[in-house]
Image (cartoon, rainbow, N blue to C red; front, side, top):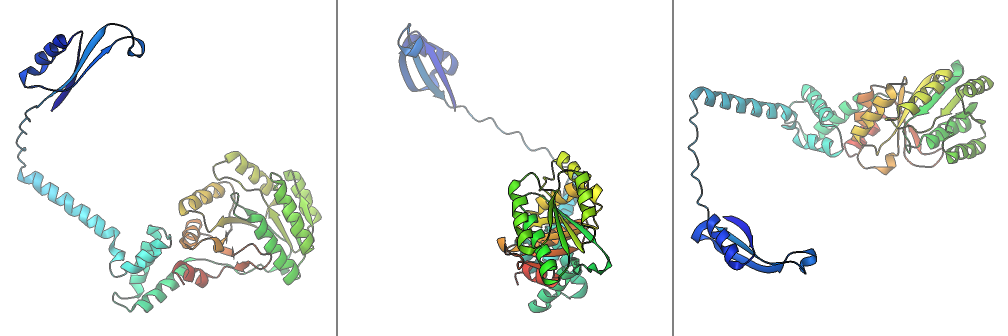
Length: 349
């Protein structure tokens, strides 16, 4: 059906236009009389007709013949697509429920497939569910590298914590300082480069006073070097840094300038367990481009119920996981990373 509007000075003129266009088969749907000009109040009168006419459908052309070679090629491409889909889901066959559990826990699909491929090498299909779960937990635990707490008997160790804003670096560094100063009875010093947030420096100062360790705020790379020299008799020097976006190259370069002067023994990247895997990978790429990342710390395990991101980040960075934090309390809510506990969390234990 075709619908068209016709406008004339009179009804006769508008109908003449209608017949000239649609012929005698047209149906008038609506007529309207009005005047031209602003707001339809002035000007010459006019008539508007809206009409429609049925249009016979055009016959569809017959389909082009398909020769046997084209049909064979089409069938071959279809089989290739089916094979590709089957290869992508091959691990979900006998272990469908485990694959779905990994994905539900936000394990990256590639990592989930990798884990199940490893499991098929040690466990035959049809094994009891409890054996499959136990085997998978063991494989997950093997994929998470961890390290023991520092042995501070060999001299001063300088450790810097870096990462994006809001992941809890300042609280984490206070927990580490408290454990070594109060529980391990080591001589600890705190240095902070976070001069962008006044509250952060004040927060760390409060922690330092409670723990009973010295704190210095440094504003330039040279000041950091001088502060390190003043505290060279300490067992452990912890450096807190300002949160940096992985997309801000200028701020990352500024951070690099500071740490190039400090020559830390270790640089720990701090990530929140609530971070999406894609964002975590971007953060890792951004910081690893300018800094030698040696360890990983995952915070805020208490603020999520999906822990696959931990495995994703560990495998992507390829460095050991040192600590995890489980709350805001200082010094209690921090633990040395245990791969078996993390595997339990990832698999809903």
